[in-house]
Image (cartoon, rainbow, N blue to C red):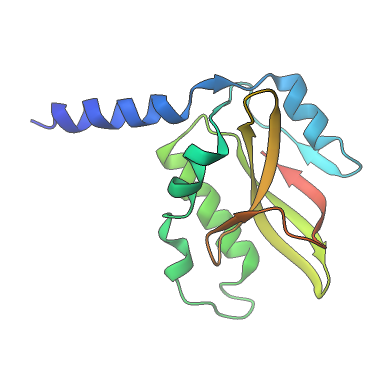
Length: 142
């Protein structure tokens, strides 16, 4: 009945999960002077140009913020779970970092530049994908 949907969905998924990320590359991104942990062994990604529109459309940002009840760490983990349910092999994770105003939780993702793998930050409370100045990670999990 929904075979057309499955076909479209699988084409989208395979267009996003197209470059296998070597575990050694991920391990280097996790060892950058912080506590980091890789939980799986197989990850696939694509370019940031393909990822940004998808990452910016995850609807977590529409949830109402509540201090200590639904704050940055809750948004980060909800965003992580939402993306992993759609793209299970995508190398997205949660990170804790120091920011100019204290501490903050957000997401991070690995992408293909065309020459090498790199990573960027995701602010799930606003669906912004960027390297934020003054944000220094001290914990990463993927």
